[in-house]
Image (cartoon, rainbow, N blue to C red):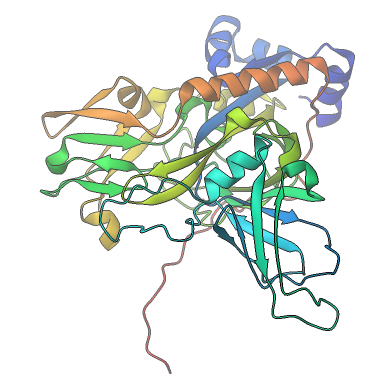
Length: 395
């Protein structure tokens, strides 16, 4: 029905019709699928939540004399130096040096990699301390200095796994409170936590990866980035509803963008009591309405999306594969669900409010002609699985 070129032409002329995934459902109900597919050019999707598999490459440039960094810390958080002399990779879940972690559980995890990334995007001055084993071409043994993101040559976010298509709902069936990356879970099924924007979430609006693929342009915390690969643990060959919605984690996206262009309110360090540190990110993805089928899939509602309730007291850590039950996101967003006749309080690890803000910001950028769509250069795998790590003896 439409092509990327036609849609981008309408964006350039200021005539593109852009709606958020929150708006499109009622619009299609009012106009009808065929008429709406003719009118609407883009549906914007978004999510905001904790994404542990995130991090960034930083380049400091060369000092006088030069140093080949073999160990380095930013604000006392260890960075990876096993690359070129003054390139480092900072991971979102890296702990600060000296953090007692869970030595006296539950640990507080007040500061780590995700907080460093937040501080960098916010423009704060941070300390770099680096050591070297010294070479003829890199004679400096150590350096201690202070820098901000503007002092760096490059600050590039490179995230191996973001935007889980769907995810677990976490519950605790044990007799003791536990602390997880899904938050604090009270004993004996007193609460559940989930983490998804549901009907706003990118891959739930494009469940078969028809428009989202390698090369897709994305809005990553305010910067214009792109998908560079399927994300790690991408497992698209899963059970799905008749509408194509996966009933488990399924697909993921690997993405990258320039941190110097990011907005601090969408990059937030996270402290998870008893678990560790992480990074909360805001991500927006536009879906071009190329035909009626693509539009129909963007009309997915929270009530159509099923998520598995998993016992994090036993089944998740022991990797049993068992599911307590399934619930939909309409139930979850109500704040209370019923499991085996018992009412259970619901908490969210993601923010629908922030996701909706992002979807609207992206829609406005497209309407203004500040954001154009890209055709993927390669499709996401559609039938992949995830292999377990097996314990083997040496052969």
